[in-house]
Image (tube, rainbow, N blue to C red; front, side, top):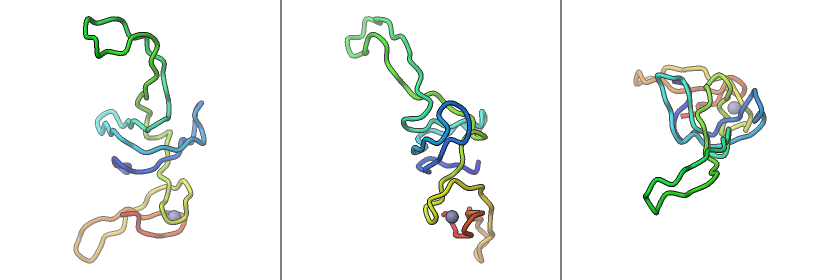
Length: 104
Ligand SMILES: [Zn+2]
């Protein structure tokens, strides 16, 4: 997965195009991510008997496919494709394809 929890991403297609948010859940098998404030869906929550449950229409974030988001580079602040560079110690780092800086 090129996108990790805590990354800032920008939506590049769909109704939420242009919105940015922080990734807070990653589903690697489904190739989906949940991004704060992005792809909100209205959900009708019924009374469950648990008084702590919020009842009525609640908004929550739904997972979005990773092909619909692009990582925002922390160096150039642009949505970018991700490349990889092998570091001298053998680990792979993600690299911004636009400015060439190492992302992490
Ligand atoms: Zn960059």
